[in-house]
Length: 158
Length: 153
Image 1 (cartoon, rainbow over the protein chains, first blue to last red):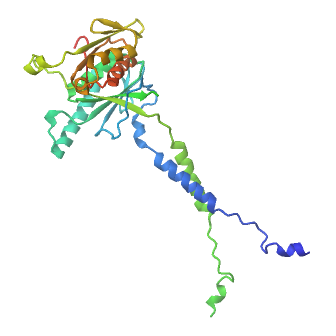
Image 2: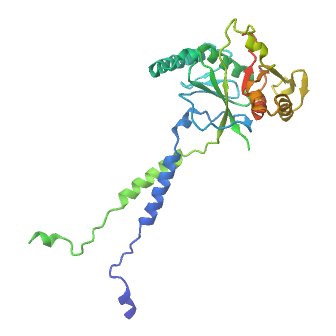
Image 3: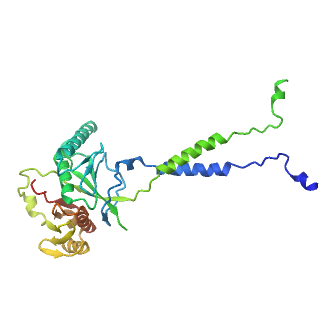
């Protein structure tokens, strides 16, 4: 038959992979660049209060300390254990004192004056339902350990 | 030459794609599952130096400074916001508080930057209400916000 003659010689169909691989690399690049490990410090259980004038600052604070407080007023520290600041203030104080000591050493190395206040920012992520007294207690402990800069986190409402 | 004979008749070299695609799909799946959409978090930056004993004595600077704004929040039994007082006046909502603050500081950004607002709230109040008051202050660009000390030190 004449029709057969125009058919290709090899029998197996060749799939062109190039566009698929291109697309896959695009996707990998996208997911790689959106991967953000700093989110690990944020407690997903915390529902931040809404505030329309809470502006996200473009630049991240210098070596921040995150304090996550859930709705029951419990602070979940780095170790993962839950601490009530109104009951067990000393364990929070201990952790913050370690951070303060670290900041002082870092500031000394950098030649900054630690007496004017530590450069570390304490980022407070408290649940909107958390009792204000617990938040206040955490702030007070942090102040007594030498921190002066605080960030109160809120979700920016539209 | 004898070596020539082993060379394939057509000069095309086929690249084995299968392992590469396998690995690429593995990577793709890893990055897809670690992908997390995080809502944008804003913040209120507040500088609060620790209060030292004896530093509260009025200095000439303090006397000439602008009067502080006292905002008092009241809580109901279950921690909900029950009332807002600014000085001695009662306001009913955070929007009204914002408007009242606007009436005090006016349009001058310098006054707003200098004036100090003190928030007094009971410990049982929900934190969201306090952030609401801070938000009202931030709307009129008040920068100095202080919390009244907790009861019992």
